[in-house]
Image (cartoon, rainbow, N blue to C red; front, side):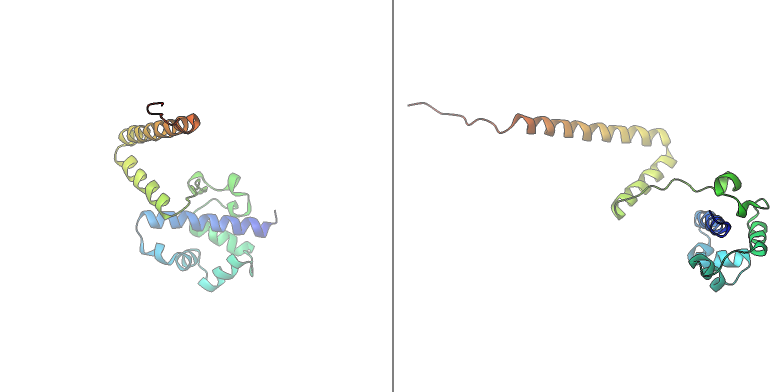
Length: 155
């Protein structure tokens, strides 16, 4: 992978790290993320926008500046993220949601889990078992086929 692509990938990784941090702190900077990150690394927001779009590249000087401002080891912006970035900055697994309702359900479970992990796990298992039993019952009913008609009094 070209150095310019590695630097961009790592800069975006750092931006995502700060976005998570700012959102967790309910920081005002999370509302204007791109501008806040540009200010953090010491560049004009339009310059940052051009870097993200590929119209400009992160040069040697800016790479070192990003490392210093983001407090990551020197040279880490130039190496593949898996080997260079501290674990706290590595991307977290992303859960893909089909729609807003599913996302909301996951957020609700997360709140419950953080309140009481054991209770959340137990309740989720109870609900899953109930749903699996319902599916099993409907599958058995479907394989039996339609009920035979009942004949009343043969003449």
